[in-house]
Image (cartoon, rainbow, N blue to C red; front, side):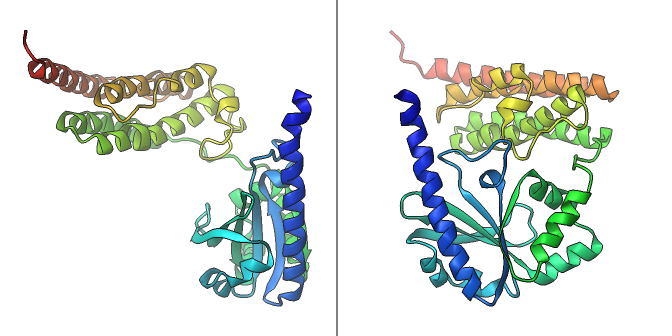
Length: 312
């Protein structure tokens, strides 16, 4: 009974998205400006397939995407929208209209000009774009055969992997991390919790994620799949680092931010192991200097708190 209860939301979501897809296909077939539509992401993948919470990711190829981005009335043909907005696509090559439909169905309509796709076919599909299609793609509509050509071209490319890490890039990120450790500590001393939290749990966590990716590939080989922007991190990252993350995020509280800042410094052993594995130098002196400054700032914070405490 428990398994059946867990399966029910996924089954309902699958049916709801299927109905939405059917309405979208009907609209596209009658819309001359749209030339192709392809599902990518979890609702097209066999590995890491969609669950009950997965959204629908659509690549929409149009003669001119602008009308579909500038206005949203066409969305009514697909479903009943609760809200919609436009933002750049994840790869920065175009823009997408994101829509939350009634019932909690969320869809990304990523619009690309047909001319851009034709140019990619001529110049070569970018490796990251090919990787997105290769992970899983389902063609919904393909009026000119353009989508089929893209999928064929993507399939012919070798699996994508990030370019080899250079020592220069490695040192830039290490220096960036320790600089912002001091930056965050200074804002904590000022009592600027919002800025301190943005440093500790925003910028520094982004650098930590990059180091976790580099560490995973250094230890497991360059083809080790680290996905993108932290997707499935719990599966590909070092289990010690994943365990360390449990204490690395802070409440909106000065004492807890100091604690989380210290925990975020798990970056250190990740960076050191990566450096050893790749034969890079690790800037130990810079690490030690920044760490000492953070410790002094934290000590000052504790002394300030003690001086503010009421005396008996």
